[in-house]
Image (cartoon, rainbow, N blue to C red; front, side):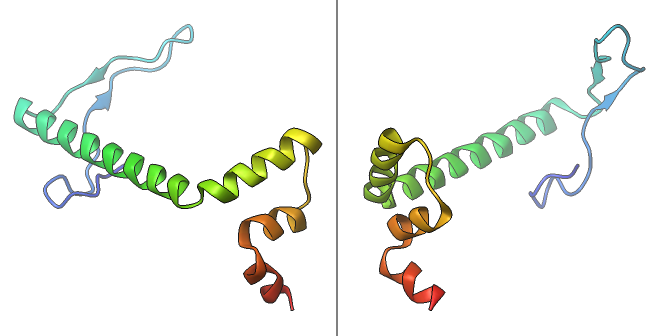
Length: 98
């Protein structure tokens, strides 16, 4: 349950009190300071923003191929792995198979 931050370490923050009752999770007790809560929030925010940017960059990098895949799927609804690789990897996909 640890965080990937040197200051936070591999410690689980917060602990559940009690057991589930009638489908409701028990409250989580905050066993850390307000300063640590801000640090955790900042780390989580930076991690999410970084991964969001990474995903957007990846989509932008492959936008043309993704558009081609979408066009095929709109027509056929399904495609084989070979069809996918032909579009997504182009010639390099064919070379890898050889």
